[in-house]
Image 1 (cartoon, rainbow, N blue to C red):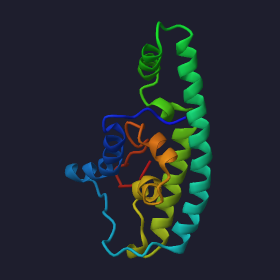
Image 2 (spheres, one colour):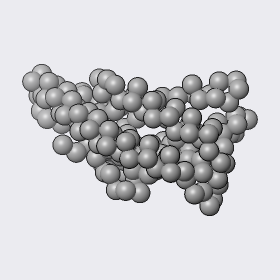
Image 3 (cartoon, rainbow, N blue to C red):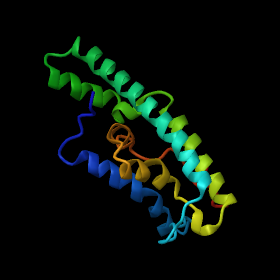
Length: 164
Protein backbone atom coordinates (compact mmCIF):
# COMPACT_ATOMS: atom_id res chain seq x y z
CA UNK A 1 0.00 0.00 0.00
CA UNK A 2 1.18 3.49 -0.77
CA UNK A 3 0.53 6.39 1.54
CA UNK A 4 -2.14 8.55 -0.10
CA UNK A 5 -0.21 11.81 0.10
CA UNK A 6 -1.16 13.82 -2.92
CA UNK A 7 -1.22 17.44 -3.94
CA UNK A 8 2.36 17.99 -2.84
CA UNK A 9 1.77 16.76 0.72
CA UNK A 10 4.69 14.32 0.55
CA UNK A 11 7.03 17.10 -0.54
CA UNK A 12 5.63 19.41 2.16
CA UNK A 13 6.18 16.74 4.80
CA UNK A 14 9.76 16.19 3.67
CA UNK A 15 10.51 19.92 3.59
CA UNK A 16 8.94 20.39 7.02
CA UNK A 17 11.02 17.65 8.62
CA UNK A 18 14.28 18.62 6.95
CA UNK A 19 13.97 22.28 7.90
CA UNK A 20 12.29 22.10 11.32
CA UNK A 21 15.42 21.47 13.41
CA UNK A 22 17.11 24.49 11.85
CA UNK A 23 14.24 26.66 13.10
CA UNK A 24 15.60 26.16 16.61
CA UNK A 25 18.58 28.33 15.68
CA UNK A 26 16.28 31.31 15.29
CA UNK A 27 15.64 31.27 19.04
CA UNK A 28 19.32 30.88 19.84
CA UNK A 29 19.56 27.13 20.25
CA UNK A 30 22.93 25.61 19.32
CA UNK A 31 21.80 23.58 16.32
CA UNK A 32 24.70 23.10 13.94
CA UNK A 33 24.50 22.77 10.23
CA UNK A 34 26.77 20.11 8.69
CA UNK A 35 29.90 21.22 6.86
CA UNK A 36 29.39 21.70 3.13
CA UNK A 37 32.19 19.26 2.35
CA UNK A 38 31.25 16.69 4.98
CA UNK A 39 32.95 13.32 4.56
CA UNK A 40 30.66 11.33 6.88
CA UNK A 41 32.26 8.76 9.10
CA UNK A 42 32.41 5.08 8.27
CA UNK A 43 30.55 4.54 11.53
CA UNK A 44 27.65 6.69 10.35
CA UNK A 45 27.53 4.77 7.08
CA UNK A 46 27.51 1.44 8.95
CA UNK A 47 24.75 2.66 11.27
CA UNK A 48 22.78 3.82 8.24
CA UNK A 49 22.97 0.32 6.74
CA UNK A 50 21.31 -1.05 9.89
CA UNK A 51 18.80 1.80 9.91
CA UNK A 52 17.94 1.34 6.24
CA UNK A 53 17.08 -2.31 6.81
CA UNK A 54 15.04 -1.62 9.94
CA UNK A 55 13.20 1.40 8.54
CA UNK A 56 12.15 -0.63 5.49
CA UNK A 57 10.66 -3.23 7.82
CA UNK A 58 8.93 -0.77 10.14
CA UNK A 59 7.58 1.25 7.19
CA UNK A 60 6.04 -1.92 5.72
CA UNK A 61 4.50 -2.81 9.09
CA UNK A 62 3.24 0.77 9.56
CA UNK A 63 1.65 0.76 6.11
CA UNK A 64 -0.04 -2.57 6.81
CA UNK A 65 -1.27 -1.19 10.14
CA UNK A 66 -2.56 1.93 8.34
CA UNK A 67 -4.35 -0.22 5.78
CA UNK A 68 -6.07 -2.08 8.63
CA UNK A 69 -6.93 1.26 10.28
CA UNK A 70 -8.59 2.48 7.08
CA UNK A 71 -10.36 -0.86 6.59
CA UNK A 72 -11.84 -0.60 10.10
CA UNK A 73 -13.18 2.86 9.24
CA UNK A 74 -14.67 1.51 5.99
CA UNK A 75 -16.93 -0.81 7.97
CA UNK A 76 -18.57 2.23 9.59
CA UNK A 77 -18.45 4.79 6.77
CA UNK A 78 -20.80 5.59 3.93
CA UNK A 79 -18.04 5.55 1.33
CA UNK A 80 -14.31 4.91 0.97
CA UNK A 81 -13.37 8.59 0.77
CA UNK A 82 -15.11 9.27 4.07
CA UNK A 83 -13.41 6.23 5.64
CA UNK A 84 -9.97 7.51 4.63
CA UNK A 85 -10.87 10.99 5.84
CA UNK A 86 -12.00 9.60 9.20
CA UNK A 87 -8.82 7.54 9.53
CA UNK A 88 -6.73 10.70 9.05
CA UNK A 89 -8.92 12.56 11.57
CA UNK A 90 -8.43 9.80 14.15
CA UNK A 91 -4.72 9.36 13.37
CA UNK A 92 -3.41 12.73 12.08
CA UNK A 93 0.05 11.31 11.41
CA UNK A 94 -1.40 8.55 9.22
CA UNK A 95 0.93 5.56 9.07
CA UNK A 96 3.48 7.48 11.17
CA UNK A 97 0.97 7.06 14.03
CA UNK A 98 2.02 3.41 14.16
CA UNK A 99 2.98 2.52 17.74
CA UNK A 100 6.71 2.07 17.98
CA UNK A 101 7.65 4.36 15.12
CA UNK A 102 8.35 7.29 17.43
CA UNK A 103 10.63 5.17 19.64
CA UNK A 104 12.38 3.81 16.55
CA UNK A 105 13.04 7.31 15.18
CA UNK A 106 14.25 8.55 18.57
CA UNK A 107 16.61 5.57 18.96
CA UNK A 108 18.32 6.26 15.65
CA UNK A 109 18.32 10.04 16.16
CA UNK A 110 20.18 9.58 19.45
CA UNK A 111 22.53 6.96 17.96
CA UNK A 112 23.45 9.39 15.17
CA UNK A 113 23.90 12.21 17.67
CA UNK A 114 26.17 10.04 19.81
CA UNK A 115 28.33 9.27 16.79
CA UNK A 116 28.49 12.99 16.04
CA UNK A 117 30.01 13.54 19.46
CA UNK A 118 32.69 10.93 18.75
CA UNK A 119 33.83 11.88 15.24
CA UNK A 120 35.56 14.86 13.68
CA UNK A 121 33.37 17.89 13.00
CA UNK A 122 33.53 17.42 9.22
CA UNK A 123 32.34 13.80 9.61
CA UNK A 124 29.14 14.69 11.45
CA UNK A 125 25.72 14.00 9.98
CA UNK A 126 22.68 15.97 11.06
CA UNK A 127 20.24 13.42 12.52
CA UNK A 128 17.42 14.67 10.27
CA UNK A 129 19.64 14.19 7.24
CA UNK A 130 20.59 10.72 8.45
CA UNK A 131 16.97 9.70 9.11
CA UNK A 132 15.31 11.21 6.06
CA UNK A 133 17.75 12.90 3.68
CA UNK A 134 19.82 9.79 3.06
CA UNK A 135 16.64 7.75 2.46
CA UNK A 136 15.61 10.28 -0.18
CA UNK A 137 19.07 10.07 -1.76
CA UNK A 138 18.68 6.30 -1.99
CA UNK A 139 15.12 6.60 -3.32
CA UNK A 140 13.57 4.62 -0.47
CA UNK A 141 10.11 5.92 -1.32
CA UNK A 142 8.07 3.72 1.01
CA UNK A 143 10.03 4.68 4.14
CA UNK A 144 10.14 8.34 3.08
CA UNK A 145 6.38 8.37 2.58
CA UNK A 146 5.81 7.04 6.11
CA UNK A 147 8.29 9.39 7.79
CA UNK A 148 6.93 12.39 5.86
CA UNK A 149 3.60 11.87 7.62
CA UNK A 150 5.21 12.79 10.94
CA UNK A 151 4.14 16.31 11.93
CA UNK A 152 7.48 16.89 13.71
CA UNK A 153 10.57 15.07 14.89
CA UNK A 154 9.88 13.50 18.30
CA UNK A 155 12.89 15.14 19.98
CA UNK A 156 13.80 18.41 21.60
CA UNK A 157 16.80 20.20 23.03
CA UNK A 158 17.60 20.67 26.69
CA UNK A 159 19.18 23.85 28.10
CA UNK A 160 22.66 22.50 27.38
CA UNK A 161 21.88 21.91 23.70
CA UNK A 162 21.58 18.14 24.00
CA UNK A 163 18.91 16.27 22.07
CA UNK A 164 16.33 14.76 24.41
